[in-house]
Length: 403
Image (cartoon, rainbow, N blue to C red; front, top):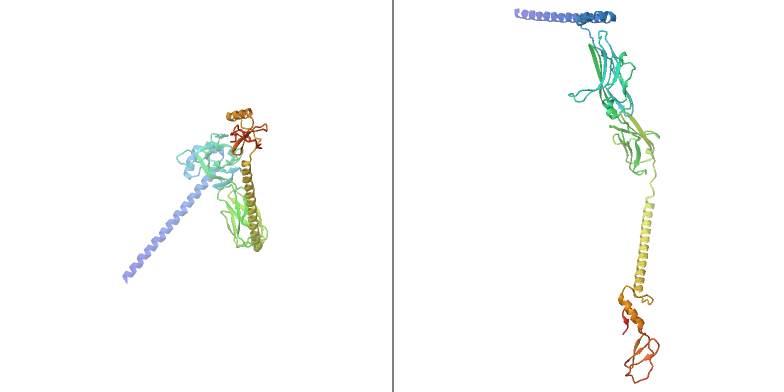
């Protein structure tokens, strides 16, 4: 029994200790909140002092502000998108609005720079404002078309505009506002993309009922990713049997019917723009297959017949040509003059002109010569006085008289 009482007393002591710890923590939180409230109230009082008093009490205010732990920094208030996507050829405004603290009494400096992706390299200055003067650092190509959006950047707006964007403007930009001892900055990433070009729509396959076909849509230009979407503008939505691919722009129809006919629109888009094209899909009845088969057979037979006729005419022409060439080569032409290029022919021709034409024939076993004067001459050994009529032997310019 005494042991049980001892255990109860120990538990009671532990509960008392925990309660005291909770009370101590609450006291600390209340004290901290009170100090923060006093500090904020003190900073508010300091901020509301006239500027002349601040300049007079500049050194004392620094100590007081450290005592109250006041924030003494310029604050950039722009809260727009940290990453912006724009199309080529457009203009953009990179926001950088700010507020000044009365305790920051230094010279106002505003700087816009191009952040280098390599942390070991320096950032490249594009445009700046200091002592009431704007400076364009034209040693960089991206400075073209760059300028402050507000006529006077010292009035709380340090935003800049860029005209005629190109892919080269895709980068991270930093706005830095400094007024000693305060300073603040903001980074904005700009991504410049190309709008999709007007796509081309076409049908692949016949538009016959019962057959398979597909509608295609393709854009030649544009920054990826490009997304395609088909929809029907007439006769209601596209039937569920058709399937489309958003990446390739293809709409497949496995069994075409009248329910798929209508005007279709394909839209292609990316992050910076969209374009579209239209196509009219028809549903034509298929032709009579029996008539097609008969027409094919008749056409084939007609083609074979024409081919055979052509071959026959060609063979007949070639046969006549060969026969003509053969007859012409065997024909003896008497009026063809001898070739003058051969000296032998000229001598033979002269000898022929010097001798009369002679013919020879057989008379009773004896040779009889006839001159071209029409008389018949017989050799001296002839004892008969028979007259023989002979055919004159012609003189050949190449071989002479025939023997």
